[in-house]
Length: 122
Image (cartoon, rainbow, N blue to C red; front, top):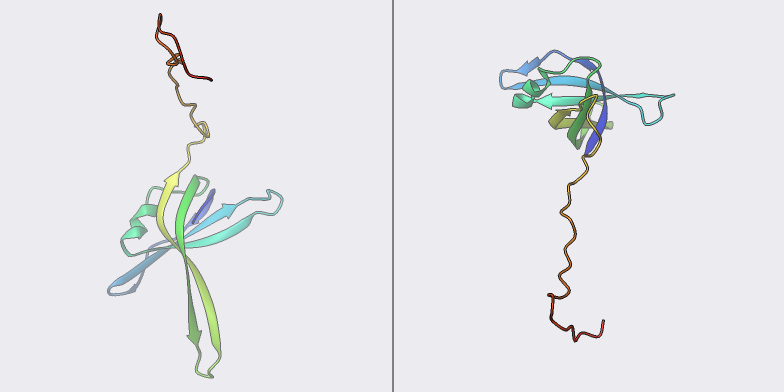
């Protein structure tokens, strides 16, 4: 999955355990500019370094996996949690065109060679 938006906040790297670290990224997603959404993504382990070059205000395209898991408390009640885990992030250039126009070769007539009769019915 992917989403485009503007970086709202880049969190500090959190060392959760001796072998596990994570970092949050908050992206302002404005499908409807009147009501922007603020979406929290997580970068895990070596992917935390992907966020080093980004700052608030940068336009980005975030590629992520949607993960979900259950958690049961001491009383036996089960809750479900979702997380959006980053696997790639790209900066979007402010002045870059959305799509470049492909260059095409000039058309060539290959239907017949000069001096040769065409016996095809179409």
